[in-house]
Length: 317
Image (cartoon, rainbow, N blue to C red; front, side, top):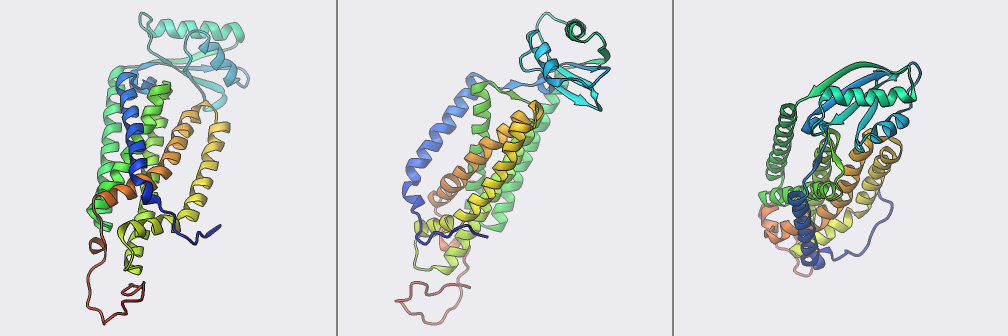
């Protein structure tokens, strides 16, 4: 399906060097903020107190969050569980304050608003659990990266595998850089969004790589720059349709999904926007710098004598 067709190829690779320089600077800034500022990890990673409270009537999550935030917990996680009257509150660790003191302080504040609120359960999540989650998250990220490289190396050529993984890690590091710079809370849902971006971004790269392979087969007289430009231009309509529809869904989660989905949708939005950029100007360009050529993708075969004036002479259908 196409909304439009671009008749003349856009010379994307003409600006590849400049745009790759921009990518490198953006990547370097993201790494700098990660090193100097670090991530603002959530309770799942750092440990903290988990409270479950019950209301006689339907709980107003917004008011509960405001009440707890007023105690000095601006990034507190407040959400319903079970029924609309049951509320779960996740509090980060505070120096010099025990888990019991935190729960008593929060419960007193909630009772001042609604005396009928009762404490169902309070639990302390230790830092050891957080370390295990960090290790598990890094292992999941590593397995995804390895799987992508192996898949692309088998399906296309190792140069495409290397190009795709550099582009994908470029997206991931930039997402983390945004979260480090603005000190947005990095939770398990955000980690899930980062892993989703990896799969989403590599899908876009695979589509472009597939078109590059087709173009090498069809247009024997075009050089590598022209083949890549043609491949990217031919996928432009599909790229716009795919990313626009996906971003519409993500924005609906961002604006209407509530605080529990806010940072998840934010991570996806950053990943989708930079995923478009990296698939076109990073993955394809790196494959070009690595020296991908027709012989890497098209096997030589015995052919009849061809017309040298035919621009598509030797094309494979």
